[in-house]
Image 1 (tube, rainbow, N blue to C red):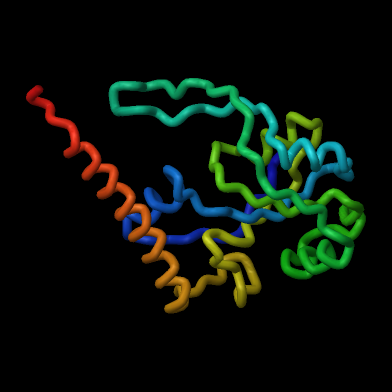
Image 2 (image 1 turned 30 degrees about the vertical axis):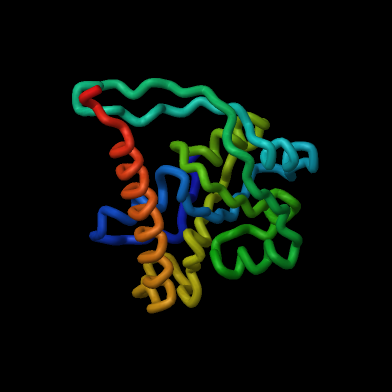
Length: 189
């Protein structure tokens, strides 16, 4: 099945941002609207919140390692909220191509700080659901507002830019503090 994936993408030429926002202890939240093929039970929503064991391919560790290795582990806890019919109708309005017959309790909003490859699809598959539509609606507090259609874009606002710079600065300060701690050890002794 081909999953319709859409939503927010942040484009930047500042390589510090992905390193600051997606790695380490300062990982920033990503919010998705997820539509699956059938209604999601309350028990499964609770399991999603607590974490699901999935297998993903670990990133390559360097240029000499050619093949990514499978990693089987439980996902980190995440926020999962079942969308009420009115919220589902709003999603339909925002995504114009959602069929009314699909709006029967099978749409949730998930907030993740982890970013494993195809994580949401694999979490849902582990509970016997198929993701039909996946839409990123927020990243680091930046939303799609006021964008209306696929392909629309905007510059980040001065407030959003300041927030992005703060994330970078916080991660860099932490990295520099870690480097300073190494000075405490004398390698010559």
